[in-house]
Image 1 (cartoon, helix red, strand yellow):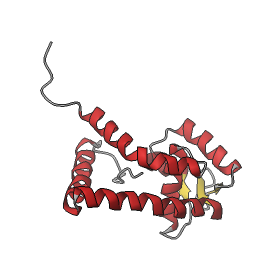
Image 2 (cartoon, one colour):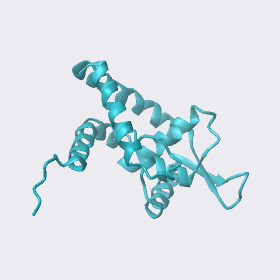
Image 3 (cartoon, helix red, strand yellow):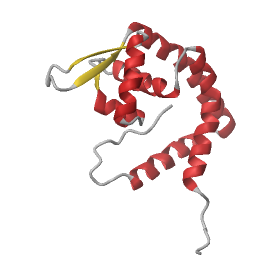
Image 4 (cartoon, helix red, strand yellow):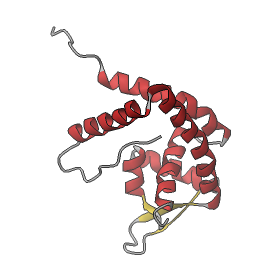
Length: 158
């Protein structure tokens, strides 16, 4: 058996994610959201800042890291709860676009305050340069490991 020389990077990345999410989850639960629902709203909230024309479900799946069958259930629950609305894409009726409702955008606004405060806390403890270096290193790892034909350069955000 070949001994491992390097630390378990996937486990460290998961531990880091869980450490960050420990601060975020209580706020999500206060708003009645699961981690997956928050990731969808975060994608839609970012789109709203870019004109808010809606996001195709395939892009949501990629950017929120939710597989198609799971995304379908998440979107159904979110639509039932009044957080999103779905429609056929105007350019291709076979595709579905999703938009956050006013209620969904209000949740994004509420949570963004809490999450940004946590990032500020991290920046104060780590230092701005270290936090920026962390972002850059993570972007580099993602880019390095991304398939050559990957069209998405989006990085995962909370």
